[in-house]
Image 1 (cartoon, rainbow, N blue to C red):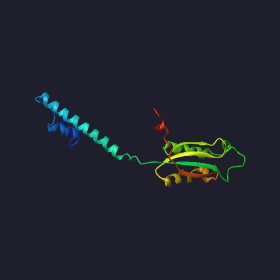
Image 2: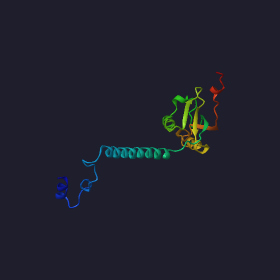
Image 3: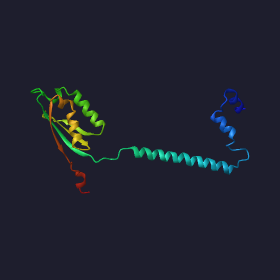
Image 4: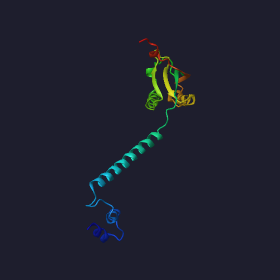
Length: 164
C-alpha cells in the first residue's frame, strides 16, 4: 500500500519506499536471536559513534598551556586629579575591562589600594607579551589615569610549608 501511494505521487520512490521494497527488514521468519544480534550491532554502532564524538571534542579542546603570574601595580598617572580618592575617579570602563579579564580567566584578583596610591592586579597569562597587551588595552592606562609597573610573580604556596 505504501509503495502504491508513493508510486502515485512520484515516479521516483522515496528512500523509505525504496528500503521497504528492498526487503531488508526482519521478516516473520526472522528468529529472535537474529533480531537481538541486529539490535546489539546497532547499539554497538551508536556507542562507537558517541565515543568517537567525545574523542573529537576532547581533541579539539586547547591543551593546558603553562601560565605565568604577573603582579600589575597601578600608580596615579598624569590624569589622576590631585587630591581625589580612587573611589571618585572615572573608572567605569576600567572596571568593565577588569571584569572581562576575570571572566576570561586572565585576571585572578584586583583591588584599589586603600591608601589611594593606586591599585594591584594579579594576572595569570601565557607570557609577558600577553600581560603587556592587557595593560596597554586598559582604558585607565590609555586615559593616563594610571601609570603601571608589571612584574613576573611567583606566589609562595605557604600551605605546603605548614606542618600537619
